[in-house]
Image (cartoon, rainbow, N blue to C red; front, side, top):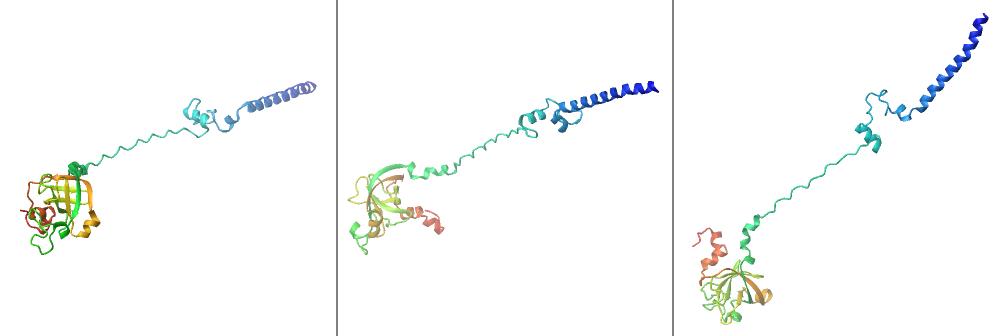
Length: 229
């Protein structure tokens, strides 16, 4: 009895010391473990088999920019190719007066009355030009010029006036001068008077003008449905 009690008395303190030491060792191990490894599983692959291994790109991205944040590269947006230039109207640019010979002239306005022609209504030659056609104001109007500069039948573009066909002459119209026809004396003064302009020669005349030619230019024959002569 004494022998057993003696051994129990010896082993009991030893057991308590061993138990206390193991507990302290376990506590130290737990204290030495990083909090992140204990809670999140990062760095503890055994506890979380799907956790990224050290050196994994996801882990590197997490350590560089924060957990769950990764750098996303946005692809550069390539500019759309420029639309081809529209040259459809250039095919007709040859009709523009700027492409023709330009001549600077002094242009005055006139009408068929006595102040301009010396003839009054009722006169047999009232409103009749040198070429024989009657004066007219339209898309293509009759104008007077020096035939040595602009032969009869010459088609001109006069800025501010429009298109003119040389159909008349005059004793005072010599050199680079024009007389532009208007229907009334009031229009002569209000719309024109006397100006220096650069006219474009669209077609050089052959010395004659006819009513049929003026009708064609103004679209009268075509509008009526009759064949052009």
